[in-house]
Amino acid sequence: DAHGLGVLGDGGRGAPQGAGLAGRDDVVVTVTLSKSLGAQGGAVLGPARVVDHLVNAARTFIFDTGLAPA
Picture 1 (cartoon, rainbow, N blue to C red):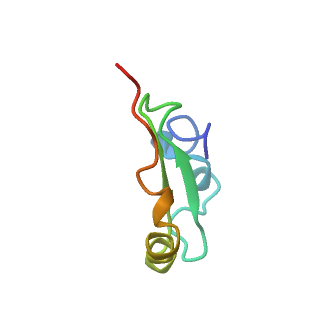
Picture 2: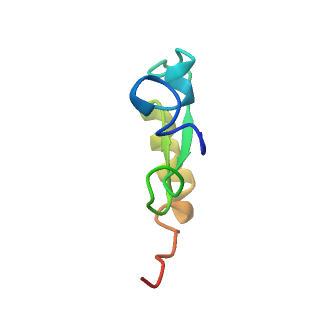
């Protein structure tokens, strides 16, 4: 949801919320924090079992965004 967060859905909650999919057990959303939020990095939002799997199986991708010099 790189371009929907902050723009689409009720209150800018993103495309999944706008489509009525937010909060469902079978939905995993990846967002970039560098578009509408003006930050760096990204996030994966989903069921606890998916997040646990990513923490345990893809640890090298957590906190891998280098900060800007500023």
